Image 1: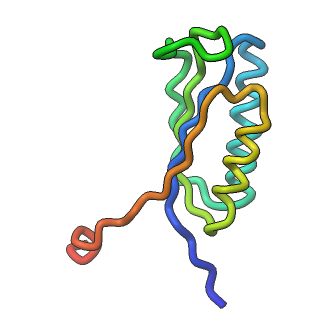
Image 2: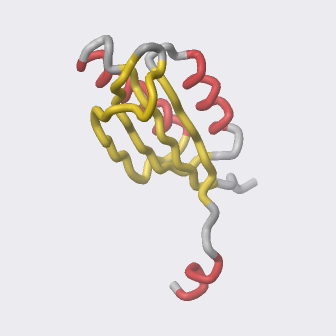
Length: 106
């Protein structure tokens, strides 16, 4: 049976309080996890930015945006892992819907 791959986008914010090496290790850990369970299309590291409001008494966070394709079960597991990792301040995973009009034109 053919595997159905969906397109997803995740944005996660890493805590900068533990230093630059810890941030890089966390980013590498999650991008490697995504690569193991799917196909990474793009990784865009936005870098250290000021948060809109303090989270866990932190004013800055390191933002990372990843576009990837995977099977439908993986995003729930990714969200669970984001939730139990103390280095992740905030995260979101969304499924991207392809526009059928542009797909027909291409």
